[in-house]
Amino acid sequence: MFNVISILIGLVALLLAIPAFLPFLGWAYWLVIPIAVVGLVFGVFSSHRSGRNLNIIVILVGVGRLLLGGGIF
Image (cartoon, rainbow, N blue to C red; front, side, top):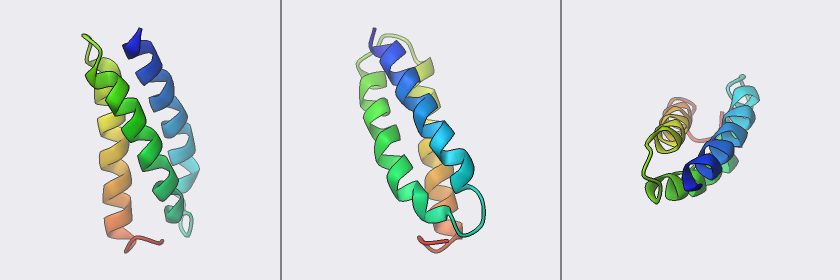
């Protein structure tokens, strides 16, 4: 059950991350990363790994994008 919740939260974070990848919308990752962290917490409590892995990927992409954009862009 935790895995399903983690996947759903990860998909929401991923859908929010897609427009944030555009130039000048990188600041939106400051909203996406905490959502993905909540999904990661649910994924840690699950016996399956797919939800956890999805949220880790969203977090890594978000952090990488923030690093490349200087935290704003």
